[in-house]
Image 1 (cartoon, rainbow, N blue to C red):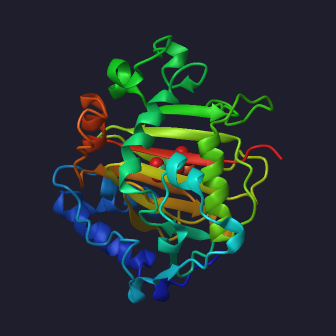
Image 2: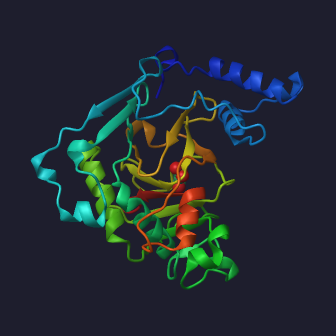
Length: 319
Ligand SMILES: O=C(O)CCC(=O)C(=O)O
Ligand SMILES: [Fe+2]
């Protein structure tokens, strides 16, 4: 996969220039500037920095067309085969696909961003669910320490929760998925199946998900998701709560990197040449407050939603 530097306006030399200027501002000397870090690691560090906060003016807003950066937005032609029904509206909380828009980036064929396709009234319901997902028998980062609660996860350990694996459980140490699987939430497989059908990236029989919980200062380091057994299948990610700067690069850490905003209710699809690219979340940025209908959600959930972020990546691991 090669990207046209001119077309996207985000050539590595431009990025290098900005990063160097920024490094100078924070008092790094030229030896450290040339420390041999990859383009991706420098970008990650740039956006991770908190004091002073980074300049976000280069972060792409996927809901705005930007010719210079190669950002295109299209409506999705809805096909009668995928008629929107009550399940999509009520269980998945999706907007009618005739209102969906899909954003693509020149040179990143296979990457799709669907801004705000989850209905406003469904964001808190999804966030609430993500803490139910963290209950046994599902595995969390706290399970191995024996501190994963059996109920009221948010109230009990919300600040320490980082991830939950669902369905076929990813093994973070061996970076492998086992062959056995547990029951997988229907709403997640339906969401991914529906999105993939509408975007037109082939079938996805989702059987695994990783839920990442991001309290305000947390990050996710640059990585590729390559352990799923069939890498021709798309990966579908959906975000809730506060916004993230999402970095998307190439198949190596030295290729150009784009920074995108991902907001609550946005879906991102990685497919084809974009399925294996390095990506990362260097920072969470507070952009909105959640109030919700009176008494419908706990104070803890409203606080979490108003300060933190949750992302679910839905995957097909087995054939
Ligand atoms: O939080 C995100 O947007 C990305 C999560 C991710 O890359 C992963 O779970 O593999
Ligand atoms: Fe990932």
